[in-house]
Amino acid sequence: MEFTAGGRLVVRISPADVGKRVSVRSAGAATPAGARFTDTVGVLTSWTDGVLLITRRTGESVRVPESSLVAGRTVPAAPARRRGPAASFEELARATSRAWRPLEAERLGDWELRAASGFTRRANSVLPLGDPGMPLDQALERVRAWYGARGLPAYVQAATGAAGTQEELCAALEERGWQREVSAEVLVGPLAPLADRDADGSRVLVSRTAGEGWLRRYGRFGGAAGEPPAPVRAVLAAGPSVWFASVPGADGVPEAIGRCVVDGRWAGFMAVEVAPEHRRRGLGTAVMAALAGRALTEGASASWLQVEAGNGAAQALYAGLGFTVHHHYHHFRA
Image 1 (cartoon, rainbow, N blue to C red):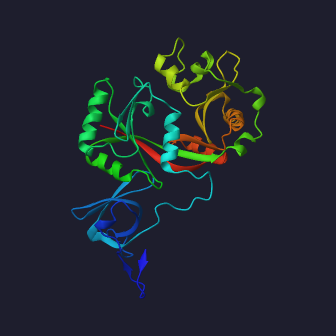
Image 2: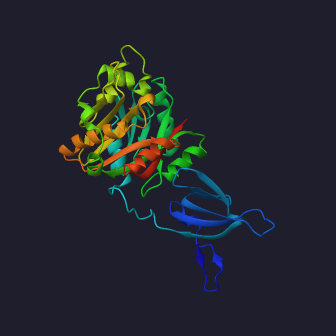
Image 3: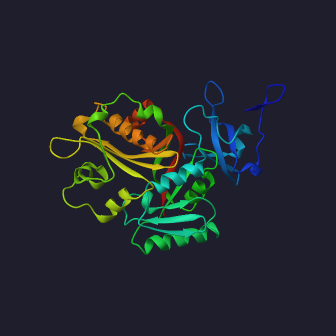
């Protein structure tokens, strides 16, 4: 907050600061102990009709009446990061997109429209890295029509929480009635310490293909017997350099699995799953360590993964492996 020489709080932001990261203090209802204040930090995404809309790092939107402002100032675009590899939002967003390719893609200016017969939101949503080349409302109509022609709901994937992310787009989507369905964290970490983990890597098999047992363990396929749909196989197999890992099980279904895509300096981890009866034995760590070792041999040095917000067990596991949050992304549905 800003203080004058006399210690008085002052407001040093205006509508001209829309798009900047701000810190504000606002007054709420009075309590017996006196005034109640709320501090909010995030990107100022709009200032309309006397109401400030501030988008926090996690994507949560907070409305602050202008009349309640007690103090406010602009703050640096992103806090200094002391852990994890340095990366811009756009670099990481493109790497994560290349690791989970759709069956079909089309450009709309700098936006990429992606479809894969409905298999996962990531492969069936717009990646809006830049300008669509037309007014936003017109672009969103094109998006609705494109997905509608394929019998799919229209999704836009947008990010918050780092320098260069899309808080203003998230706010604009919400204002137009798009509903945020799922949020996730994108985590980053150094690769070598993960590869050096003291895990039971001797049991982990690494292959270029996902075998039948691997697919039966894979949760998004549902563990069903039989031939998985073609889009599942196609999306899993696509990427710059794809590896699959598994810990063999007695019944032919692995006790644990994982997928890694190596792309330049990045190694991305996906589909790390452990059978419920085999959890808390370090198998997830063993799978990731084996994949990390393979990625190191291909020249990668940094790693990323994605975990849905609210998945406390996975978040704790990855924090213990040295991963930290880089940004958040959200899927908005028309």
